[in-house]
Length: 154
Image (cartoon, rainbow, N blue to C red; front, side, top):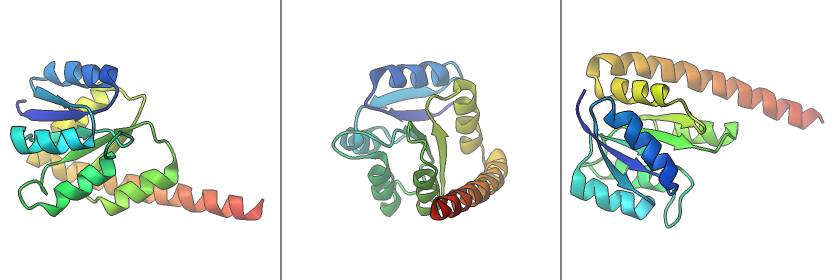
């Protein structure tokens, strides 16, 4: 598979890991190290997909995704969030607000990341990925509701 991927993370080791995993699959990977750098690189490099950390200096990943979604030129660029934020409420909020994103938590499996990238860039696989994502959001919503009920009773 070919394509240009923008890897955005303030941790250089994560950028190196993402770069190694995706170049091994034939992708060209460009790096950015914070949210503002990501927006600058999107304009310059025109990536086919973005692997985006959430917690970063200068601008977090959610804000980057919001800004990209408001621009007709960048609105259709697929995004895979890669984040250490394991909080279920935060994950659900992100997935419900930003409809066409995927979400992997750190630590992550490099094969799973590669599989997500492959699927998001392959129109034939994208529909299946959307169905899978819908099921995941439904399960996540149920877990969050149960978690809130339990908190309310303690």
